[in-house]
Length: 421
Image (cartoon, rainbow, N blue to C red; front, side):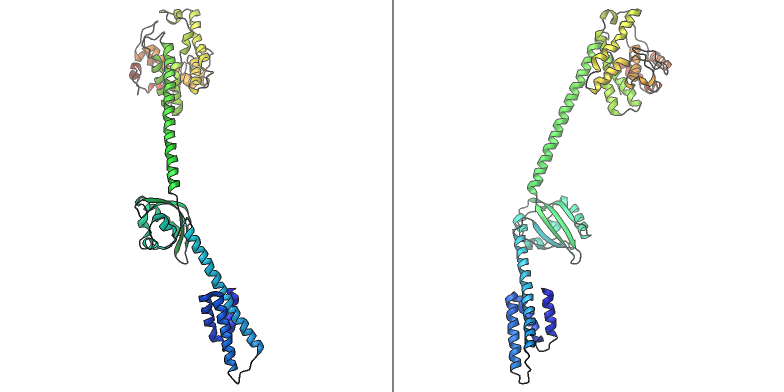
């Protein structure tokens, strides 16, 4: 449309007689649209015709006047039509901007707004003139200014912004959360942006996040309570077994902590170390199935009594190993195998070397040390040095050499007295 009008104007400019009317037609079309352009074209044609008729020497050519009429009409009508459509489009855009809930804006690279729609005043209370009179960063919450300046620089460098959030100060002093999308027009050196007030959404998200954090804390607290309850139950189960043959009632706890320290010294992962600490105190739970005449006998056991005593390993495993709990499953393995020996000379199954579970290998050392250094119904306590010598002599035959090496690095005096590091 515009191109045809321009061709018509060029054609008329080539004709000296009507060329003086091109500018008035263009101005009329720009000012008044189609009606103004066509009216100016008709008037221009009439004036040309009147001028020619008033000139005696004029050579009136119907085709020439027809071509002029078409050119004037195209110039005025099409240019006026283009201007009218452009104005309607601008008016439609302007209405959309006024009615839009989005805050639309353009800003220069100098940090000032250059154009704002009506939603800014409806949302923040500031007039367009007030917002354009001060650097836009002054309206941003102080805690968000550094991020905002960095994002503006990022957009100016040609990178689009999507869903950037910051807080803008309203006229009443409160702050509203805005979510921005923006891009740059490098030719005009301006940034086009639109924002949406998401204050309600932001508060809802913060509320959900707060409730989520509260729920996580509650779950952690309940889990901690359950964990403490579980450990207390395991401790009391171990205590029930040791009450029958340990006057101090601390044997299971000492063996559990010593085993934990050995496991940690061996470099086992911490989760496994803690499981060993919880499981090992149950190593003698099978003694609940052994009669007091054997368990509390003050002297040496007969061969038959010793065979019966060995069954506490199998009884303990039967009590524990079928549990769905990881700790109780390990406790069952320890109960069954803590009397197995590195060279296969132990009981109940004569398992050797690394076929013995690592927790049971560790327990064998901790249990032996504690049994030697503390009084039992059938024996007196021996010295720490005696216990260390016995364990060192059994390294590689009775005990796992690596576990013995780890055990020897510990403070054994503290272990004897139940003071753990």
